[in-house]
Structure formats: structure tokens, C-alpha cells
Image 1 (spheres, one colour):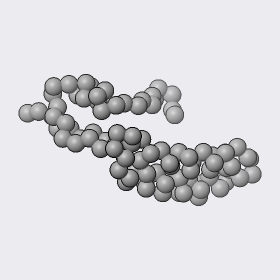
Image 2: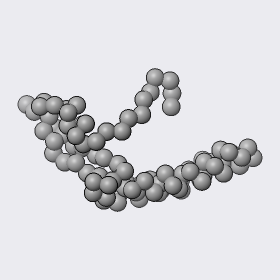
Image 3: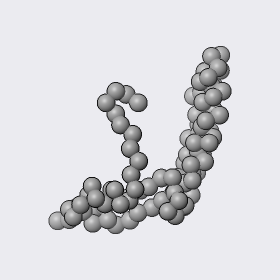
Image 4: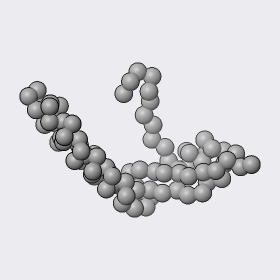
Length: 91
């Protein structure tokens, strides 16, 4: 990550607190179970860990992106790896 960027994980409770009373939560969706990360790890190990194979990463990354898309489309209930919260500001 570039300097100054931060990676955060939030629960829907955390997000609701950040939005406070100014927003109405319309929908909360949990998707994926993190399978795409299990696909990405061996790709990274082979293409980033071994010099001559680094050139293969851009092509191999599409396998990961496809897995991530599939994972994101998979409903997973409260066990979901991804959280999408849709909210609307109160008028």
C-alpha cells in the first residue's frame, strides 16, 4: 500500500456507529468466504517469490480476479468475507 494508506476491517455494527443517526441503513450484504485469497497466495508464491516467473503475474492475476468476482457474488450470510452496507443520508 502507498504510504499514508490504511487497510481497515469493519463490522456492520462499526459502520452503523460511524454513520450515526444521520443515515438510514437500507441494506447489509455479506458475500464470499475468502476463497479468492486462497487462490491468490499460491499465485503470489510462484510469480513473486521466484524471479524468472515474475512476468507471469499479470496473466495469473486474472485467475485471482475471477475468483474474487465469484467469491463476491456468493451469498455467505454473517460468515461472509466481504461486507457491503448501503445507506442513505437523512434529509
